[in-house]
Image (cartoon, rainbow, N blue to C red):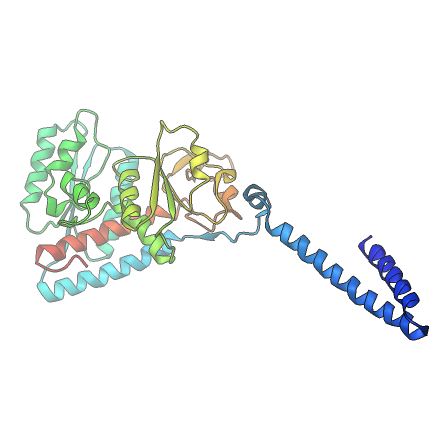
Length: 364
């Protein structure tokens, strides 16, 4: 249609110039000038069309944006690299100071998931050259008995890190037991003084940071993801993940919004996130349509959902629908194989750090 209009315009332009000019030369000169002018009009219309296309609303842009390359943040691979560095550090500390980092792990009860986590941590620690101290109690142990065991480990010079596997039975106050751990042996960074030091700007530094949040930060660092000036949204406010990860993101100069179980219209906050960290324990809670195109997703949650096609009859999923995030998020952690392996790797790193600090060396 445009070609027909321009052709007609060119002919009429040529006709006018042919009349105004004398002879054949004048007519063909008009044709030439008309063609040139018509081509110019066509280029102008093309540029106007392109300009209109580039000024689509953000909503339209999001709907049309299905070509984002979503990259997997491979926690298994990054954790392997961290463990190798820790192993080398353990060997150097032993050779230079004659000190072997020691990690005590306390397990209360017979919960299969807790026992599995402790077994995984012990295996990883042993592989890195860390000496492990296993302490097990029945779920009927009293709070006083458990606290007395922690105090005993505090006095053991071969133990540099103490980990109490949570959760504990209902009759035991977890906060009381965590606070019994010596500040210099708080390998999971959960005692009040370590948390306080983490939150404050200036002053003494925390001996270590919480393992899972620290693993999230290591993933961002490894994949060269800039945090400064970005809007980070954290779903979940637990002492283990949500609260400390929000503080660490803020320390890296992100603008942080924290959402929780009482937050209304969570979807609206998620849509604003350049960096999204989710730790609420609800499988596939965050949908792909909630995500801001190009965002970075760190999925801390892990939930078993029924799947008759799976060998065990179920499969593990995160808090974010991984499949729906493809083509929208720029980076995302898989579940499993994302944050989980990083938590164990950071536990080993913290143990080495505490052992180094115990002999007057820097944390790293």
